[in-house]
Amino acid sequence: MWPLLAIAGFSGISNYMQGAAQNKQTKADNAAKAKANLSTMRETAQVLNSLAVQSHELLSQAATARATATRQALIGKSTAESQAAAAGVHGASVDAVQQDIERELNWYKSDLSHNVDIEAFNAETQVRSVVANAKARILTPNATTSNSSLFVNSLFTGALSAGSTYASAYFKMA
Image (cartoon, rainbow, N blue to C red; front, side):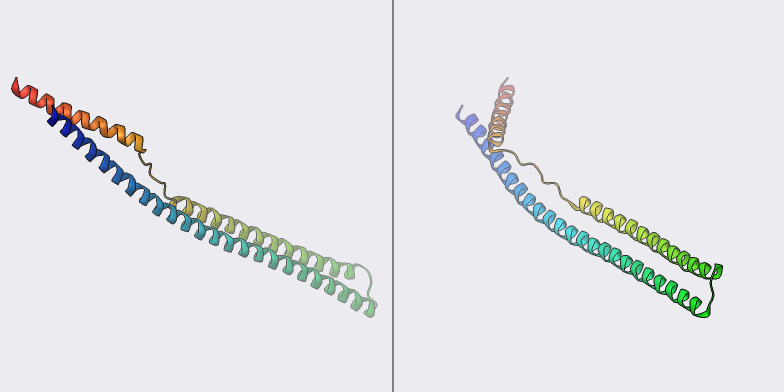
């Protein structure tokens, strides 16, 4: 009887120690994964921040270009109007020059708006790519076995080992 209890105890203790070592290794692996995930999130935030700054700069440049073009168009209109008045020209030709300047301004603004839309789409595509890459790099932690489960499993393993030894010895005798 004592040898069976010794076998059960040894098997249970061995199983418990292996499980505890595995839990310790899993916790260390999970800590390393958490550190890597934090680094991934930090890098992703920096890239997204950079993309946001670039997008803001693009919008700022577009607004400046739009304002400059409008100012140039107003200067052009007033110059054309003052030159026509100085030359004594009135009527359709003066209106046509004004309309041409306005049309050119509208085309420029439309092209500028189209380019901004394309750049915004490209920036959004980059953001999606960065986020997808970050999601792919995130490491999932592994589950550990609780101490109570580990203890119960070790007792069960020890009992099975003792039972197996007993049955093997019993059937050898028979």
